[in-house]
Length: 457
Image (cartoon, rainbow, N blue to C red):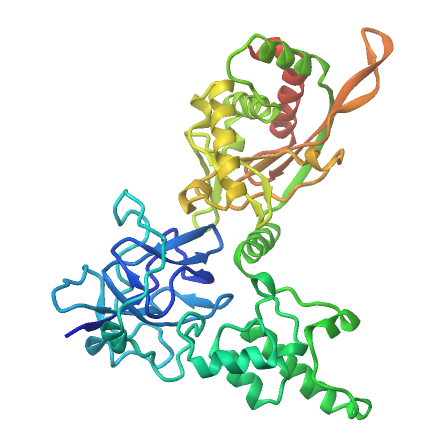
């Protein structure tokens, strides 16, 4: 006889307490194997696939795409065959019946194995396999659970949906909520992936309907839809990466007394030296890698800026290693990957690591550890076509170097007016760790190396 086990959202590491469900990779009735990815979730730091810790058949899923779950909440239940031994961390339902009704962890419950570091190295097949009817019989979902009805929906339900026209709704809870409030789902524009209608869309429409019901001019209007938001403005939830950025920037401005200084520098020789180096063959060195090398060299002379402030102890903590973060704009928002021990790397080594981390950032595959522990940040906002900015310090660091675009400008060179490649450099620093003399010395050293790269080489 099959035993039904619960799989709860595991501890994702780095102090994260919740995650948003991006997409389910398996459906109710599918056969899963150990370490097979079953759901893709997004935290404030990264998007990851969560592997299943045991073999069996999926009997229920908890949580819709787009919803957030706390660590320890139920993700899914799996029927494990009589001869299958559950992997440590699986929680039999009989032992968790005293947990809270909302699916959160009860007293004595655990969230299972920590996600970071468990599982086998070989990837499991992502192909969905449907269980035989005899085993599927053990997998009827719990009443009222937010379960995907897609691959196992009844024939009657599918026929009704087809007869009424295609409606991009997956969750039966969303359909039931719409029916209870008399909403026509065809008039709603879903905010989920590929127009999927989420519970938040239905709740928004319900709220709009109530607001219009209180207005005498709304008597003749039909059900509200998200398209009506254009008249009053849209609401964008601050969650995931966007929420994490907002929280960190707000904390930085609240806690750090920052100041900014800037200088223009002639980057003509730096660009020429890079062109000669790359033309000689071998691995190419990016401009960002050269700027990163200038940062590490300057921090070697001005270690006061490679620091953090312990407010509780009223101490400035100077850090021995330079873990260089760099701002990377992706489709998911702004992320800051970190090059570990950047002070020990050459320009070529920095170029390779920067390229690797950038590729992972674009793919949304950065691990939380690859975005943690930075001690100084390099922000090349010149790629957006702007000359200067006053960047906000990446808390809890003490400084950030900003680099504008490099473009031809009139410049006095050797006593004569000439057209040179000029860049504006800006340094935002925590005034608690140093005064303007140190900050100015750091920025001037970087500018001197930009103008005379042979000094660094």
